[in-house]
Length: 417
Image (tube, rainbow, N blue to C red; front, side):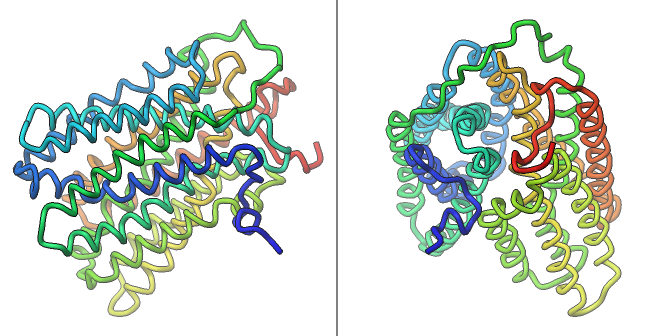
């Protein structure tokens, strides 16, 4: 009988069940409270919508510096320890948010949650890379799909529960959801204490230049930023585009977003199988091409009428989901492979700037371009994907010219060299 992990294309867990359990609990807790946080601040804490938005935005701005800080700390601190600290920082932040009558604590709590979350994502893939180092060759690339698959699954389940809680006209369900998230962070940190990541015995490089002089890695960060912009554009702009530009029924927004979430939560392992005989950079380039098709297609839906609009949206959202399945694990594996062994945690931390920058650029670009013309944001997203794909393709071409095994982009070890 085929196991669930094998069916989903996930790696054999072996002695790393504690890590997977910790990631699952974290994803469920965050998926539950994430959609409710703004509502909690307004309905329970009594803040205005504008004040709540500024509070959360300020926390995100504070967290922008986190990847650089984590990169420095990671030089001397194991990734597992940083991830545990990130979970505890988020738990403390949630605790501050639960003291709803003190505005100063609400501000501190929002900042701590944002900082802890950015610290988590700036360090968890270093932990995953350590685990992958000790895995069977066929399982190594599959480990990089685990965190994002867990995250999508947590968002899907959390959104369903959050929707049910929002239907209750009282404040206690929101407080309970936030409390559950805080407990999930503490539980995740405790479970991670049992994780024993692989300790590499390979020689450590000492002569590599710092990241700001590593043009190839800087190009990777730039290329990935350009790919992440269209990735983030869907959740930011699709609801508004559907209801105001397309004048389509609002009910289709939920199924469209749910479709993406379910595919991303279950199919990333299958995506790795499809490209396992190719360089992982090729998967990123393919993702860029698919996002370009998606952007152009979503913009073109504006020219359709009636049920063709709904059909077009579903078709092109499927294209988007395919790109997400290819990009998420491949990008982190490429980022890991191009980092020098002596500085991999620091490099992977700084790679998170591509996501942090895109999180700022995406809503800004969408707001400006949609004000000019409804379909324009999607054409801009398509252009960003094309440029990003060309940048990544250039990195892959450059890496192929090098014969050093430490800098070669990863392919499946089952493929012919």
